[in-house]
Length: 294
Image (cartoon, rainbow, N blue to C red; front, side, top):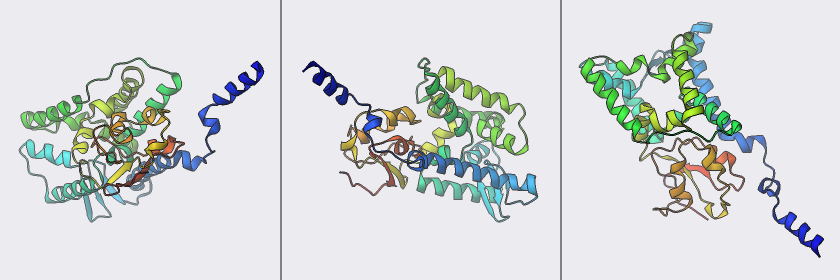
């Protein structure tokens, strides 16, 4: 009888992963692969000119001209320029309007996970942190990034210069990847070490003013992650472990303050990592008008 009890106990504590149906690499990493492909493609478009003399896009993520006809400009850059007392060229204003319209429709922080090259650095730091089992650190208040956003706008108005662009990690890394890394390498290395040793997801989740700006554009965005199968959740916490903004999951997953299965928080980067890691297939990529749940 004792042996039977022990055997039954052993069966009851089988690891969850062993009981879950096997999923292919594509099913487990689909959204991560697609994001890396998007980031690589954006970089390649800018590299074809310096490397091969084929100028598909001239410039960088701050301001560019694609195929000689399509201007694209960072709206935050244009806002800073206006605050310095200078009027941007009409092409820059048109480019900013195009980018602004796109992210208002699709979701502002889609930029953070699908275009921004610093995302690769912070994801690498988060992965290394998990692998090394680092639990220590102290993250700043999430509102800090909004204070920094306000600070860089004030700095532009007071100094009459684009002061932020001298230290903007996104611009530094993107230019560095195209034209060669200089002093910007120390800034990027600093962000990696900060996220690794000091604050988990500290830069993107708590400090980056560009993330704060694009988050403000995503409150009514069309593209959303949803939890239609939330009843299947077994509280494994895998989604919280990989999410760069884990606080956005709970309201939809646990129905805290909302009935909608949609993750509605503007801070959601729509990266899809929660979809990738969930063996129970609780999450899916959808649109804001999809209110179906099981």
